[in-house]
Image (cartoon, rainbow, N blue to C red; front, side, top):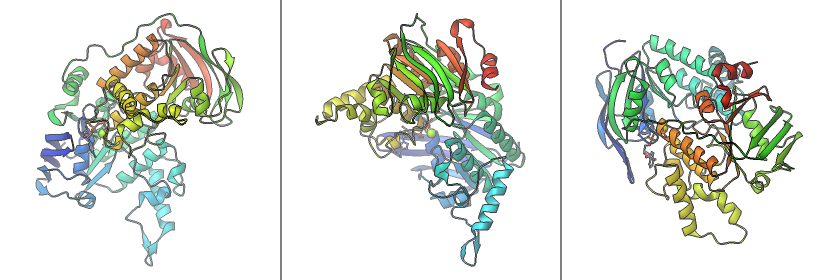
Length: 495
Ligand SMILES: Nc1ncnc2c1ncn2[C@@H]1O[C@H](COP(=O)(O)OP(=O)(O)OP(=O)(O)O)[C@@H](O)[C@H]1O
Ligand SMILES: [Mg+2]
């Protein structure tokens, strides 16, 4: 690591109506280092990155690149200064191809027209370099979220920038893809690129980052060398207090079987899912990405049709053909990908909190604004969602806070069976422990919860029983009293 400073951001201030998102933040990046930016949901990480990307203009503060003061007054100025950013929200154009997206705004030309052939060839080369079996001619809308995320990464790297910023790049890609990404990052830093890395996954930070800068409530807390800093130290820098209890779980004897699935298949990824859920129980679903966990739950929630198999709710056969059917059986599903599945970005936090309960009131009954405020308020408080008001557009909340609103929305339908697909993805450590505490309370009150998660510690610490899925089938089940290990689960998951 050279001692020359590649990027310096000094005393950056940025506010939004009702929110001081950045209040005098400093940040420094060396060439050839991976520098983590850490902080709770809403701490100001993405805002700082958007100032660097020319999306927001800071009200105060200076930016220096290689010692020279620069004015970043727009996206182009940011590019011109050698900065490339993968934003937290994917920004690919769905109705364009992978190649068109990668070369957007810098398409190769031939005789004044876009040279599609060259563009696709170049895109293919790039994708091959990163071992990605994605066709450059595929439309982005037909890709999975993980594939879209990989295309964003390839696109950002292809600019060969001096400064590369990744705002939660691994939120939906698999472990194997994360490995590729880390290999690529190591290669880039060897060449002197400086990388800013944002993630809530502490083990990733420990693996790949040299230094870490912590933000709290829009202020600068400090910068440390990662290998000299313990996880507890980082957490207390982030949340400003010690987190004594992380997982909360009071086990009790569960009640009757409330949901039973026998041999569910969907003709695609689900090839025989069988399990049961008892009242007052949390069951965890572990497995690799692509094992069919989300797809199984989509069948149960009526989002995709199942071809064969039986679903029983309270021991009676249930016919579930749509989410409305599922809701009649008091089943709710908080989906994995909040952006594609149900977030209304240009509507208020209140609207987004209450839309599902409202649907059940709608038959001619006038919507009672006060009731709406009451419901939204209750779940904002319960999830400790950070928003200046209920009228704030949800799209303006930080990523993690959007997730909390989405969980609240489904809790508001007072389901008996709650399915949570990766509930803590993109959520900071403090908020994670609040979500765990809320889950514990909900099952105590009699709810039954299914939690899909790729984070094994969360599965192991929160579940009564753990089902492991592999290749579309439930491959086995463990009870928490068996002292389950990560190895046991991985063995079944990776068969
Ligand atoms: N366009 C906007 N309009 C209004 N408020 C905003 C806007 N963008 C961000 N904010 C607010 O600024 C604060 C910082 O948000 P930011 O997105 O930077 O957080 P973050 O640290 O990236 O959080 P997360 O980990 O959840 O992604 C939050 O309170 C957020 O609600
Ligand atoms: Mg963010």
